[in-house]
Length: 466
Image 1 (tube, rainbow, N blue to C red):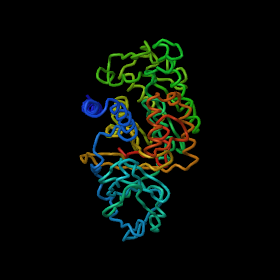
Image 2 (image 1 turned 90 degrees about the horizontal axis):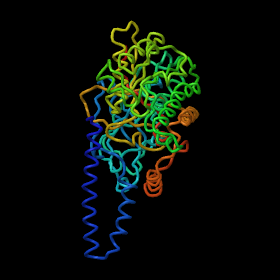
Image 3 (image 1 turned 90 degrees about the vertical axis):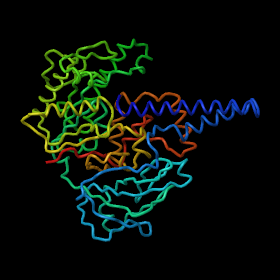
Image 4 (image 1 turned 60 degrees about the vertical axis):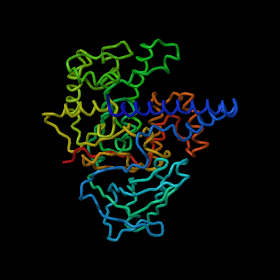
């Protein structure tokens, strides 16, 4: 069982215990006070739960985030004076550095009901309700203003305490190199790195799976499960080839491998054994490769095996010769297909004559917080919760202009998997949170990924750099 599954299991167990305790309390109130009072209290408790306690947060908001960065990245302490961040020593910044400021936050009482945030010169980076601990602001894009002492910082439903620490991370611009983005599913490349691959000198998008399962939306059209899964897979295969064209990536450099969703772990566990789709009644990857303009080694048999996946990746790596590979990082992203996508690329690179100079990781899902990045569309992206100092991490952040964010939003809007309406219960929850918790909807779409991904920053992690 993965850590994410363990956290979910514990969360659901605790929720069942809380519901049982609440039910017993309501029964006692009905017996001792009035029969109708528990009905009113039950509705109020449900509303309070949906508005303020429905987030999947698997840690205490009072826990310190714990990162370990390379010591040379630490610039030193800043001080907050008259609302501005100031440095005691001159800052020599080129302007393209990733700038992270470590702060201590303390929530106000209102910050237990409304999302606490830190306003950074017009940008607003949100945190957990009731926050009280170490957090990391993303100041990338403010180098000139920071050097001039003009970055204004103000807590909203929280306050900054102690002395902030500045971390500066420098590296060559990956957009000036050949970039290959590895996407476990159609839309992962856009969620994580649309801004990067849209601006790169040359980009390749390689999607590993058709993402055909969980096709209930298409079953509602009257299709049997297998037909619905095949239709969804074909649509997402089309998306994986067509949507990057919006960013100028040639069709010949967009490749769909057509393996099956959530079957990558089984493939890795038994590399020679084909793993058919869970729902599409299909064991041939070629069904979802019909839009490819590139021939792949496993086109010969279409068998969904780990060995075929590695062979396909090796052929593409030798053909594209990417200097920068962007792929999921299992350090932060717990999705099983994302972990296996990372592992497959590492396996494919073993002994290969071409090696990238830079490997960047991304996390479209988190172990500990399903709402991250917190806050609204267009806001900056603070560092995510992390509680393991065993590994040195290096963030890399890109700044997206408003027009680039709009292009990214339109790319996500073309993805069929992000188009269906949210379930009724989720829509009610969002309405209650909008009315009672001050959370605004995304102007770009209803799916939660429009809020999460269309941001001022794209946040990646340097896994390798020569």
